[in-house]
Image (cartoon, rainbow, N blue to C red; front, side, top):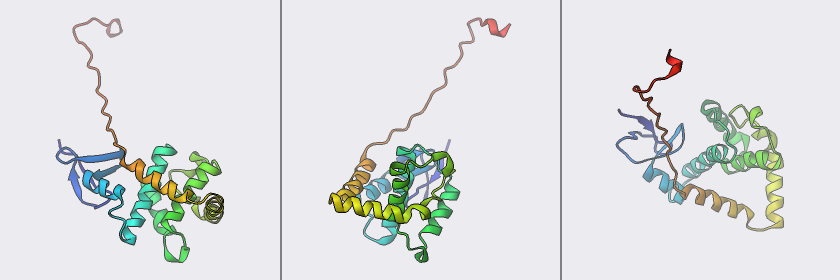
Length: 176
């Protein structure tokens, strides 16, 4: 049976049964080659690819580190709104604001409701925090960026659970 999905990087539809896929969560599918190029940084030559890197990094952070279910409709709407030029928020800044909110301020996952709506409220304090940290210990931000890239290179595993079939030959007193 065909399982047609859309690659989050090249936005082309493909069948996971016929092509190699990387599955990070129940709604994030990638062509294996697209994912490896994206993580390897070869696609970061232009601004659009770099913006995509940070957007996917936010999603990855929320799923892997925070264990938060992302409401993709809300997330996409918020991301588009926050990255408008008049808002003066960069995709990298949004990533670090989300990270600041959950790791430093210990923000509530439940109050987030699957989105990143807190970003405008913590963006400035997040920026000051990361700048201060970088000033105190040079190379901190670059080390975090390197960790993000290395985390993406780790192999992902798809776990398929098999249902145990009930043996029809045995008697079960619950059936009486």
